[in-house]
Every structure is written in C-alpha cells, then in structure tokens.
Image 1 (cartoon, rainbow, N blue to C red):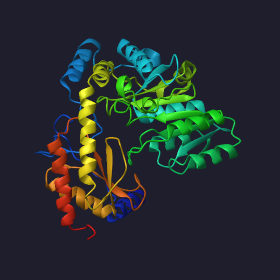
Image 2 (cartoon, helix red, strand yellow):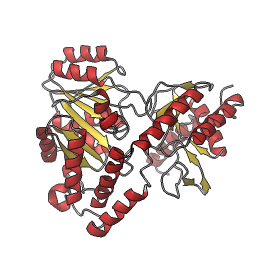
Image 3 (cartoon, rainbow, N blue to C red):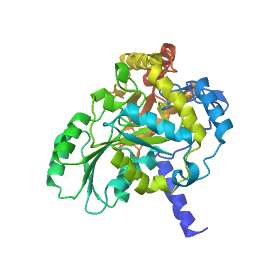
Length: 400
C-alpha cells in the first residue's frame, strides 16, 4: 500500500474512533417533511427548506417551463454567453426587494460559498483586514484567508471586542463579515451595532443572510431577511442571500451599491470563471420569490411550530439554545452521545442529523433541529415525545 494511502486510512480510523466520521444518507423522493430515505419514509427535521418550497408544484412547474424554453444548461459563464433573461430579471427583482441601500444592484452566484469568496477577495487584499465573528460560517473564514488580508476574529457577537480590534488596526481597508443568523446556533448577529462600528471605522459590512432571507422581517417586509428585521440600510452593507434554503431552489446573490456590484462583476474570480447556473433555476426562483413575498401563511405556520417546539422542548434533559429562527439546536455535548440520540430517533422514524466537531466546538455536539412550514403541530409533538422517551432511557453510548 502507498504510504500516502496508509496515512489517509490512519487519519480516517482516528476520526471514526472519535465518533466524528460523517456519512451520507440517500434520499429517494422530493425534499419535504416526510422524505423517503434509504427505503423508508421519515419525519425530517434536518432540512433548510424553511418554507417548504423545494417541492412546491408552482416552483416545479416554473422550472419545467424554464427548461422547455432555455434548456438545462447555461453553456458558458455569465460574461461569455451564459447570462440569460431570467438571470437578469431575477437580479433586478432581488435588488429592488432586499434593498440594502438606495438604487442597489444584485449579482447571482452559483452558491453562497462562491458568493462570499467573490465578495471578500474582490474588496480586500494585502494591507487590508477582515474582521470575522468566531462562529461565522466556514466560507467566510476561507474567503478571508484566501484574500491575503489580515484575518482578525472576535468573540461571538461581542461588539466591544470587535470595537477594540478595529481601533487597533492600521489596515488600509477594513471589512467586517458576519452571519446574520448563525447556522449552528440560530441566534442573530447584533447588526445595528456592527453597522455603527462600520460607520465609525470606515469599513464594509458583509452580511451573510443565508438563514434569514425568506424568513425574517415583519409586515410588508416579511421575508426580506435580517436587514428588514432590524430596519437597516446603508451603502456600506454588502448583502449575501442564499436561494437554496428558504427560497427552496439553488444558488445565491449579492446585493449592494452599484459600484460594489460592478466591481464584483469585473473582479470576483468565483463569478467570472465559472459556468452560469442553468436559467431554468432562475425561472423557478422567480416563482419561489413570488411565494416568499405573498404567501404569509407559510411563515405563520413556521413560527407557530417554532413557538410550539420551544414551549415543549424546554422540559427535555438537554440544553435548548435561545433562538427565534427555524434553527433550534439541542446541545447534547459528547459527540458519541449526539450520534446515539440521532440514531435512536432514526429507529423511531425521525431523521435529525447529529452535528459534531469540527463543525461545532468540542463538547458542544448537538442535534441541529430545523423547523419548516411543512411541519404540523402533530409533527412537533411527535419529535418532542420521542426525545423525552430517549432522554428517560438513554441509548447505549449516551451519558446516563
């Protein structure tokens, strides 16, 4: 055996011994609250399809119509010949709706990872600095490192710590980046205070609203995301929203001042040097966005389920983190115990993936429970009852 292969095998064996080996389950149906997984129907609490749009017949029909008209591939990058009318229309609609500043423009990316990579590497470089929350998503961290700017991390949601680091920096340009809704804890970033600091230190504020877009916002602004939740707008804000979570399809977009968007179009390598997403997806997203904006009942069902879950889960033996979003983490602690509880749920027909290090810090392995507009009150009650039963008689491998 090659030494290189032997080293990989040894590292994988070590990971398995630490209960950190990941595996995939194969889904054999449409996304939803009750997917067919490995030949069995499950009750699913692990998807980011927060509004239940991934399999909505109207969105599916729009995708089919888009495929019939435009085909299934873009054929080239946006700047070569892959920018189709549905892309252009969707960018205009997203910019006008999210409106991080007056006269904002938007730019579509294939994934949120590529969007954040494009923004940070286009706006900062050597002699600059990126300031990131310690619980930021991995793509923000990777982008900061690849930008070659100084990467300064601050304690989670600690505005005072960030203020001190900004004041101490002598960087030419400064960029603050943060999740808006933190993907593993479900809490909100202190965006108003972060924007105040960006103003005080002449910095950009990159807001990754992957888990807020489509969900947060009130009244006429419902679904516009975390900026609407806090009623924020500024030319300093660079807003990134993903389109494969609450919007139910795929891709991402960046909305910002026109000068920012034009800079990304000209300089963001993850935009310039990749084939455009199929225009059929933009057609599907147009239908999805109409539902996000106009179907208030979906969000009402979602937030009713969140309230029901939080009221009932407060009596479980594990720690429930504070969150007003669809992300409802239940902290188990030990990675082996988190796996054991997840498997015990699976044995009861409920699918909730266990999240372990390095995705979360050591000692904070958890069930990342996500709620959807597709869940009923009975679904939530079934999950709580199963967890209560498991907690009363912990499975093999769990702490007693």
